[in-house]
Length: 341
Image (cartoon, rainbow, N blue to C red):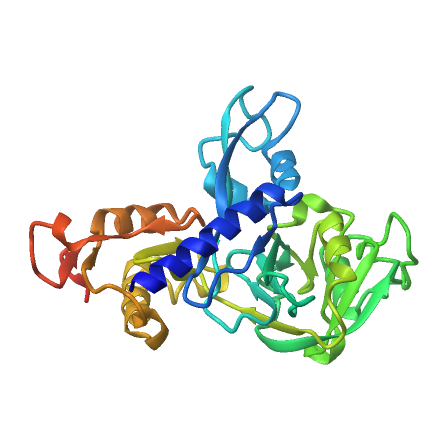
């Protein structure tokens, strides 16, 4: 246990040194396999010249993401000097740390580059994204990057043209050349899924990043996809997942990160509390979760209750040492009828 804690301490030192020297906050040292949290919550203050969405783009945060973290701040007219929470701390999704991982409920992509030069620390890169609307769902599953184009030409799919006509809108031109009116922006990467009809691309409407606004493709801020484009090789794996409930460890402390479920999943998550409790129990029973972990803790029911109500998308500490709890019972009731083992 001493060596485990010492190793984690060294990782934390490396992490903070990298953070101080990093120009852009979306690139971080990748923590060891048994550490699931990275990033830093920060605070800034709004000015009367900017909207909450301007602040979101400045700090590489999506629109819904910054609204959930700041429910009491007006998105269009924040008070001058209003405190704005920058939710740049994340739990790594519970999947293989490989290639691109896109978690639809949090509308965020994580990139795990292949190791570079010998001696270089592995990193994780993350950016907000826009995803498909409820009627144009971004498909789940594993695919790969099969094509990359700068200044792409866009040929609008027939289904999208018919949808615009049905809504009384002017259809797009049959071919949209590169330029300032091209919805793909200046960079596009084609996925193998869906017969190659889905893209990860830039946008000429950056306020849509972090929302469900596309016809199934994945939108990124222009500066984000430009920064990633040359780093991502052809053949890179892309794993699209649906994890509104994420759990992770930092030393012996258990954190939870909760997001509202996708609209099409609301029926399945109608009892969000029970789904969360089930997810915690499954996580604690998993093999990787048990490794090197102290059993001398309990879930902080009040912290968990608040996290479920808020669904802020920010990692929340939900464990506390066992000696802080008066009851020695291993199981506590949650709202009288739910339990966490």
